[in-house]
Amino acid sequence: MKKNLLGGLVCVIMFGLILFLPKGVQANEGVINLRGTGTGGACYASSVFIDGTYKILMTCRELKIALSPEKNRYVAWVEDDVGKQKRLGEIANGKLSSLTDIKFVRIFVTVESDGYGNTPSADVLLTGFVEPINFGPGIASLPIVTPTPTPTKTEVASPTGVTETQGQSGLGSALGTIFKIALLGFGVLLLVVGVFSFLSRKRSL
Image 1 (cartoon, rainbow, N blue to C red):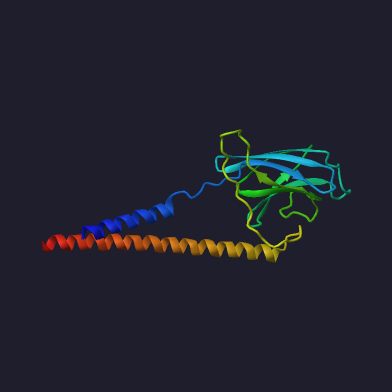
Image 2: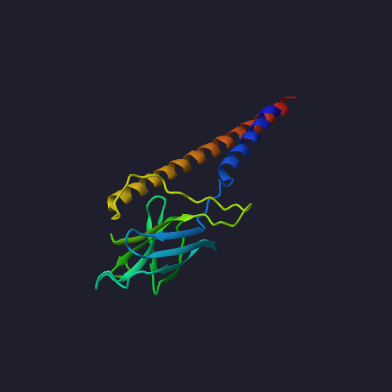
């Protein structure tokens, strides 16, 4: 019976390690080189994780004053690995300083008629993915979260497509949580059975 108790304890410890120890730490601190095709401009950005948010600093060169009288504002956006997009802010005088809580994989710049919109226009001028920071030889950078491969889509995100992607991600997360709870419950059950078996054995002696 002592073997049963020991086995139950080992199972519980293993399940606890699987469920609660941090899995490969991933962070999107890094640098982003934003380039376009034929736009004649470029931006460079850095991302540093501070107090639960990503601090982003961006500087741009040779952006045109305006593409048209109506569309004369440059706005930066972030996008995560499932396609969720969020506005960073308007680029003023070629500079931007912003915060975001999204673990993003890329930054892109659009031209807008309104600098305060919540949805990017189809006029994407520059885009760039997060690259790890090079700290020099012998110093490792944390791995970058890379986007999940998805079918090629146009720059104008379809509301239906985004909703479906987020729904699938949410379903997978819910199933994973249920599975973890089931494993933990099974481990606790083994422990309880082992303890009761040990006590019963001890009383019968």
